[in-house]
Length: 321
Ligand code: UDP
Ligand code: MG
Image 1 (tube, rainbow, N blue to C red):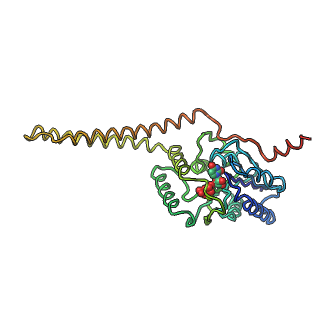
Image 2: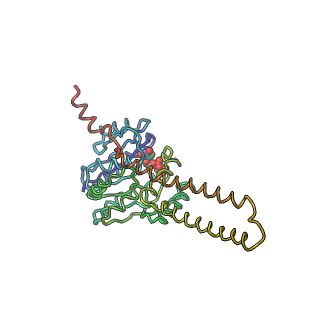
Image 3: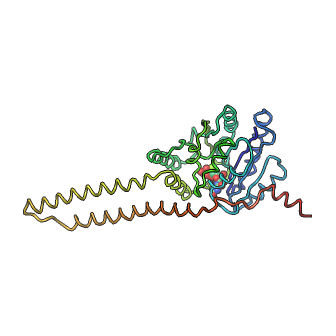
């Protein structure tokens, strides 16, 4: 079984050398144990890093026969970088994992065992997230709850650390959407799947490349790509407001006809006006964000573009005297 490990990297010069050391040792160990074939390899996808990450990948690929590199033309984000790797490498099973060694790499061995036992997709699930900040853990929990509420199928506490068989990756190729949220797409593929548990550790070095803005963008992507629940909620809110208006109308008529008092105050007029105005703008925003997504999708722009691969650089060099 030929194993390919795909590792997206964005400004990871601080962790690269340790990362490559550990992954190479892991693959060697599995080769020695006869679990994977000797042509198994590790592909680092440089997601438009602005530091020396690509230079390090390129240099390593010359001295380490297991290491390959793919350089994207610019930063396209973690999901697209993972996708670029998945769709570009060969291998019977492909594992995707972050570069920063937060995910226990020894879980890869267990993933390979599960694959050998007949699973096409093996999800890495974090059994312990105490090394993540409290904020990150809490936002993650609320996010999973929200997804469940909207009927989106995801694996709780699974990020993009997983093994996929060749045929599962080929199925992924048939999902042409421009905005990818792999954690939502991959369960849609089907096949037999399972999970392996592992402990989430601290980042080996450097700082998170996933600031709050990118996290929110990913959460937005997850919801709008897999659910129209927000659009349906609009009808529910509309109905509720309509019923409320009917109650108020009944009350106003009752005061006007059956009592000798007048309907009191400006407040009772202004509050519904402001409330409805605000609600309409919010709702237009929700509809607009879906429209924006449709706009983005119909353009069919490429999800990533590859500038070069370490192999190409080698062949280019060999033709230069
Ligand atoms: N990453 C990437 N492109 C980006 C941001 C991140 O390829 O635009 C990579 C990054 O190099 C790392 C992985 O995605 O290998 C996960 O990022 P990070 O560890 O910073 O996220 P966190 O673990 O803090 O959620
Ligand atoms: Mg990390």
